[in-house]
Length: 161
Length: 402
Image 1 (cartoon, helix red, strand yellow):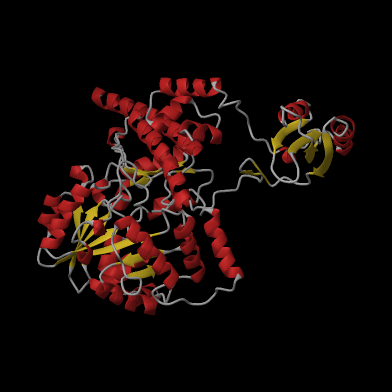
Image 2 (spheres, chains in turn red, purple):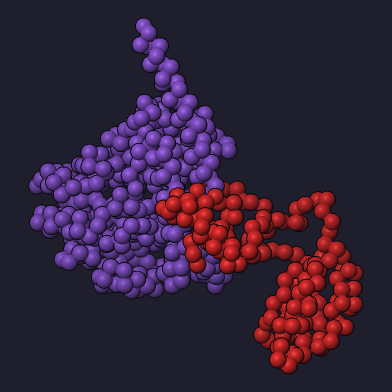
């Protein structure tokens, strides 16, 4: 992977000027490279990773992993039905997977009932859907490479040879 | 009472100079919320698969002594690893000893080789333990000042320091504290002198994996160098395993046998948990090394550029994770600079003089710290220098009015 992407993936706030210093390149060259990544859709957006479990007054939400079994359509395969499903705002991620199910969805709702209603009223009745299995998430330990814990204090002694 | 206690301590140890900057270190350790660029170890935690191997070995009940020389499995693994890395075959039975870090290996080497008053050449500035350990082993450290040659050892300087009593040359590259390293052709010149005078080169190559601009050349890989080389290395820096304390010495079987004698009476063996983890590091740690190295390199470019921008001229270090800038433009001594910077801006760095009095006017800045920390620390140094220069300017104005 390009080193610019490696840096931004870890710290989206890194400035082009800083990246230029790190990679010994001109800031203009970095800016252009980033623009190109954005244009090509390689960089889609910049966001903060938030540990929602620590926010006290946030509206509580629940997440579920839903396995979906599909009857593929002639000529269109899975893509058409997948599009129909991932267009629902409740679906935050959608993957085509190998194994005994076809699609894996991550669905968010404000409570158990709202997710259950989504499955029962929107998802399951869709034509071409053979069946669904819903797994509610109980606790998040790690997400996208980030371990969701308080920042640990430095374990090294502050000065050494 | 005090007088009695004094007589209890051996003269040799009593005469050892305590590090001049111990008080400064205590000051740093006593302060809170300091950004420290004074740390001599990686800021990465040991890669998980290596930690897991240590845990698993405990679960399996590996809690015993190992052979004095170290687990055969580890020595064999090292032999293969070094064969690939140095192109040199070390026999796992006779030519490899597992030690408690490079520190122990270095101490053993001196105790195994030195007779009273034998001289050991040590380029300075250098890691703090070399000189005192030579003295403890009864030898005489002969310091070669490299400050006049951009901290690079030169063949002429070695030749000048050699006499009949010279037994060994310590070559630490990439170097802590300067980050200086040597190319193959530079090392060839050193080798000629080593061989011509039948010296032992004690090559401390613990930072070898962190070489950024060219491929690291192990001293022992130079043709004909093996019988005059004691190759020291360890897992601390390359695999971020400082606290596990695993190093190793490879060399002529006579030296390794002599070192093993001392090692078996003092240490017995390195902790088995650490040795098991080290085996895993050899087996699967390569990827982690590459990732860490890329990250260090980016930090290096950033830090050196910022330092030079601040008027603290700094050569590009070729390895390790240290920058060694000159602070002469500030008008302060190394220790004054470090103390003031700590008090005013809460940034900790190590005065160059910790590594030899010749390094007055320099600082060691460790970039084994997160990018966020480095950015913030350098911003604070910028403010510090601005204020410092204002002070100096108004002071000299006042003086000129008198």
